[in-house]
Every structure is written in C-alpha cells, then in structure tokens.
Image (cartoon, rainbow, N blue to C red; front, side):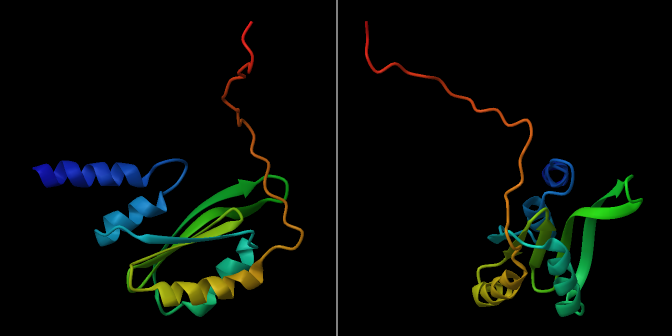
Length: 144
C-alpha cells in the first residue's frame, strides 16, 4: 500500500509546470538520482537534429511539448525530452539543453556537451522574462 502512494507522488511530481519535469521523470523511470549537466545559449533546432541523427539507435522514447503558432500556421516545440539507452536523458528546451546521466558517464557527457557547443547562437541575447518581480527592501544606513 505504501508503494502505491509513493509511486503516485512521484507521478504527480513528473507533471510539475507546463510539461514533464525531466529530473522527476529520470527518478521515476530509473529509480536513481541523476547527475545533471547544463549547456545554454544553443540553437535548439540544430541540437534536436544532431541528437536525432547521432543517437537514433539509442533513442528509447521521446516526449515533446509543442504549440501552434497562428501567424505562420506551424507547430513548434517548446521542449523535448529524449530518453536514451544506459540511463541517459536529454532535455532540449528554449535555448538550452540538460543532460541527465548516472555517475559513471562523465566522459560521455563531456564529449556530448563539447559537440553541442558548436550550436551556440551568434549574438545571443538572454530572453526577457515577463512577470518577474524583485522582492526586497531598502535599509537606511543611518538612524535619526
């Protein structure tokens, strides 16, 4: 009975936010805590193409969150999660990529990240996030 509630909680955590939380997916799928390597400022369309081409024989599953653009009547992906063999997972989203792996795969992930670095965007400008509020307070340094 305890296992049921434990598994249900893990499944609920997978759907955190607007799509699947990749770390929770890794834990649920492999029953292990992943190491995570991040690389940003990427042209994700090129990264996606590279991953599909390079790891086509290792891909076990892929999950994608997409949206429809009314202006050009096309469907685009927001994020893609690719599950590879040997407990490896790659998340491709916005302008970054996260690679989740076990603690025996640092050489592989280092090579992958070096390969992905070729897809760095020229003249990268970080995205402007709306609805960010700075919370804080001003403190006077002198008392009356």
